[in-house]
Structures are given as structure tokens and as C-alpha cells.
Length: 403
Image (cartoon, rainbow, N blue to C red; front, side, top):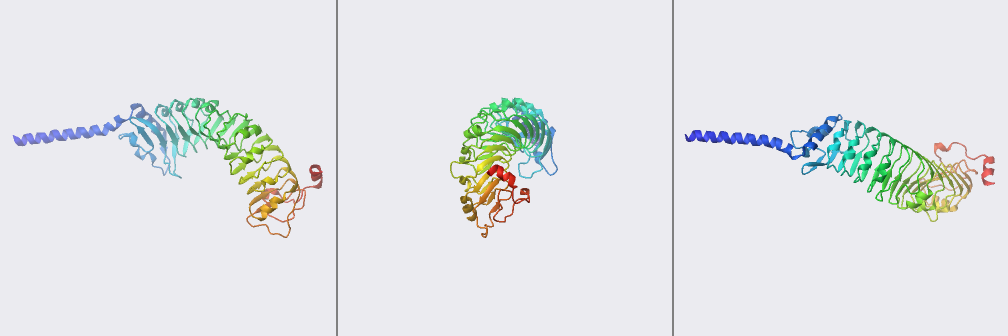
């Protein structure tokens, strides 16, 4: 009798243990909000690993989704979703973004590593009212940026760079109150640059698009530290705009159709690299003080007048393909011989002379190009191939500009 009772007790214990194990198998599922659970399932169905990627190996929906790679939870809600292996050079993901992403109502951060994700950016993302960080870069997203993105009033960073997005930049994005980083470069965006009202905006990168039109003097906040608008079709003057952006530490407006003067104040900005080449800037260049910027590129514009000696402290100076006249200041020769100037490109101007001893050897670390000016170059130096083979500009042209 005692033996039978003992066997019965062991059987009950085993049944209880099995039942407990079965409960534990599914108790993890109960930890996550059912809506979030189903949203993750839909997102997973739309995506797959590219060959060589094992990101989704941990996405086993019989276990706790909060332990999945790239999924971070707070209690029963997903608050961060980072899709793909974040290590540099990882193969990334393939597929499309399911609109179910908008069901993750507590999501604060959403990112996707570089891969081959195609299709539209789901408008449902605009439902993520707590979203602060949105980064889907170097994929193949196409179509327009949903105008409802402006409903993400808590958004701080928007990075949709290196995709195939087209259409205009929604005006509503510029109204997001605490936006600090907007990176939309290397797409096919067109139309005007909308005004950005956020006084927290520090980085605006719109290079390599098809943007056009002019910039209002008050279209960008003075909080900007990084501004790149290169390789677009933007036009009009920028002197009043730049005068306000005195905190910039990076400025690239190259490859546009900007016109008007270059304000003297831009040479006092705390930047190391000033890129204004290949525009339609005109007028003299007159820095008020010695310029300490490492690289200044003003080439391929319509700048005229004499070259300011205040630029002789620039390490890499590109003034070629403009309309500068007169003699090159002696301070440039001093800097050149002291090897404090590494690049001095003055070709394709209307310069009439430079006081340099033809017998002197220019330091090997320095590069000087003088050809196609209104003088015979006193020293033979190697010039870039784009400078052509003509050493001196025709006399008739020189008389017009230096007469």
C-alpha cells in the first residue's frame, strides 16, 4: 500500500513538472504585449537575412521576443528595434518593411543596417508618437517621404540617407520642435529645402539630391554646426543666411548655382574645411583677419579682384578658375617656401605676376599651379590634368581684365 502511494506521488510530481515546463514554454510569450508580438511576426515575414547573415537566427517565436537580437523591451512593450547585424561589413537584410511597424506603440528607436530592403517607407511609422531615433540608411527604399513624418513630434534624428527616395522633403519635417539631426543625402529628392524651425538642429545633410530653388535667410536655425548641400541645383544668394550660421564647423555648398558675394564672416567660422567650389559666386574675397581654416576651396566661381594676403595662412587653397587679377602677395611665397602651404592652386585666372626666385626649389610637400594666367610661370611646377597644357592666357583676354 505504501509502495502504491509512493508511485502515485511520483506520478503526480512528474505530471506537475511537465505541466510547469509547458507553462514556462509559453509564459515568455505572455510577457510581451500581444499586439507587439504580432507586429514582430509581421515584420519578420517581410524580411530575411542576406547570404552570410544570421541575424534572424534568434527570432524563434516559441521563446521570449524580448531576447531576440535587436529587440529591447521595457516591461511588456518593445521600445527599441535595431534590424540587422550592426557590425561593419555585415551582409544586411533583404525584403520590405511591413506596415505593422506602426503597431509598436512604445517604440523609441528604430534602425535598419545597410542591406537590400526595397519598397516604400511605411506611412504607419508616423503612428510611433514616442519615436526619437529613425535611421534606415544605405538600402533601396523608394517613393516619397510620408508627409505624416511631421507627426513624430519627439523625433531627434532622421537618417534616410543612401536610398532611392524621390519627391519633395515634406514641409512638416521642418516643424518637428526638437529635431537635431537630418540626414537625407544621396537620394533623388527634389523641390525646395523647407524651413527648419528646430533650435536644436545641429546637423543638416542634404547633399547629392536634385533640390532646387533659393534659401531664405531665416530658413535654417543658427544652432547648425554641420551643413552640407553639395551636388544639388540650389541657387540664389547665401550671404545673409551664412551670416547667421556662425556656429558652423563644417560647410559644403559646392556643386550648386549659388550666386552673390561670399560674406567675410564665413572665414571666421570654427571650421577646418570650407567648400564653396563650382558655384556662381562673384565679387572680391575679403577676409577681415588671417584665415586659420585648413582647406578653402573657392574654385570654379566668378570671383574677381586681388587675392587677399589674409588667405596665405590656409594650408590647402584652391582659387583656380576664377577672375582674380594683379600680383600674388609676397606672403604666399613666404608660406610656400616655409612649407606651411601644401596646395596653392591659382591656375586659370588673370594674375600678372608672383615674386618668386626661378632658381629656388619649392618644398616637395608643397604643390603650386600658376598656368593660364597673364604671366609666364616663373617656376615649372606640376599642375593637375584639368589645368590643361597652355601656360599663358591670350594677351587680348588679359588686356580686358588688367587694362
